[in-house]
Image 1 (tube, rainbow over the protein chains, first blue to last red):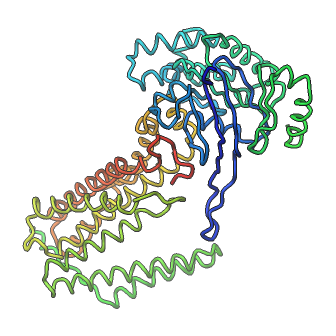
Image 2: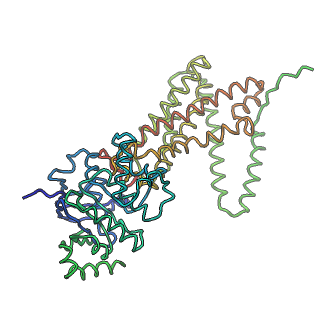
Image 3: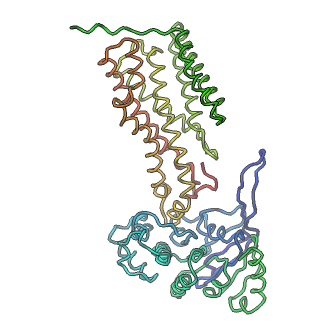
Length: 252
Length: 265
C-alpha cells in the first residue's frame, strides 16, 4: 500500500483567546481530525467560516503546530523536516491576495531569491510560472498597482507555484473575486492537475466552487469532519443537503 | 566697547512659585474647556517638578557621600527606571523583554556615557555625580525613547502586516527576511523625533544644556561646545539603542520553527 502524500492523524488544535482574571481562554478549532490525501488528489475542504479550514491548511505548512496528533508528509513526521524545505514542498496560497515589493517579479521570484537563486535564474523560472497561470512573461516587469483582481489572483498563485510544491494549499482563492473571474481561476487550477502536478487542497465556503474544482469533497464543520466523499457521490447524494444546511445556517 | 562678562542668574523658591502661577493660569484655561484633562496635566506637572527637586537632593547627597558605589547604584536605578518605561505600551508581553531592554539600554548608557565622560571630557574624579548623573539622564532618556518607539512600532507593523510576514515565511524566507519591511519601518519611526530635532536645533530650538549654561553665566561659545557634544551623545544613544533593540527583539515574535506567534507584541 502506498504512503499517502499528506496525512493528518487525530489532530487537535486550540487557539488562545487571552486571559480573563488569570484564567486562560481558548477555543477548540479542530477536534480529532483524521484525513489522508494521495499524490494526485484534487480536494475541496468545504465548510462555513470558523470551521477550521484555514487552520488545517496552516498546520500542513507549519505556520502553526497542532496541540495534539501528528501530520506526515510522504510518511515523514513534519516536525522532523527542515522547516524551509517543508515550505518548499507544501505551498500555501493565502486568502488575502497581498502583494509586496513593487513589481510582479518581486513577488513571483521571491521564494527563489530567498533560497539563493541568482536574479537571472529566478527571473527565468518566474516567467515560466506566470505562463502556467495564464499570464505573459512580460508581466514580470509590471507594477503591482497596475494589476486587476484576476491578474493579482494569478500572480499570487504563480508566486507559490514557482517553487514547484508537491502539495498546493489554497485558502478560499476566489473569496474576493467575481463569479466569472473565479471560474477562470479554477480553470487554471484544473490545468495544474496532471499526474506530475501537486496534490491540490482548496478550502472554500462555496458549494459552487467545490462543484467546479473538486474530485473529492471533505465537509468540515466546527472543527470536525462531517463527510468525506468523492465529489460525484457528494454532489449527487446526501452530502449536498448536509452542506447546504450547514452553509445556510452560517449565512453562505 | 568691550562687552561685560555674562552674569549668572539665580533662582529662589519664590521665583519658582511665580513661575508656577503661569502653569496655574493655563490650567484654569484648560479646565474651562471641559475636556477633563486638567487633573492629568496637574498630576504629571506636579510629578515632574517633584522628580526634579528629588534629583537636586540626590545630587547633593551623592556629592556629600563622595563614594563611587553610590553613584553607580544611582545610575543603575535610573537605568532600571528607563527599562521599565521603555518596555511599556505593548499589548502582549514578550519573553525576556526586560532583560533585553536592560542589555540594550544598559550597553548604550555605558558606552556613550563612558566615551563622553572619560574619553572626551576627562572628568575628575571619574565617578563625579555632577557630570555622570545628568549625562546618563540625557543618554537614558534618548535610549529609552529609541527602544520604546522601535518596539511599539515594530509590534504594531507586525500585527498590521501579519499576512505579508507569513506569506514570506511560507515562501521560504527566514525570520529576518520576513520582517525586513516592519524592521525598516520601525527603525525609521524610532529615528523620527531625532530627525525632527536635528532639523530645528539651533534654528528654532535652543538645546536645554545651552539654555541652562547661558542662564548660569557661561559664554555662548562655551555653551555651544557643550550643546554640540550633547547632540552627538543623543544621536549616538538613539542610534545604538534602536539598533540593539532591532537586533535583539525581532526573534521574540517567532517560535524556533519560524512561526509568527499567535499573539504578538
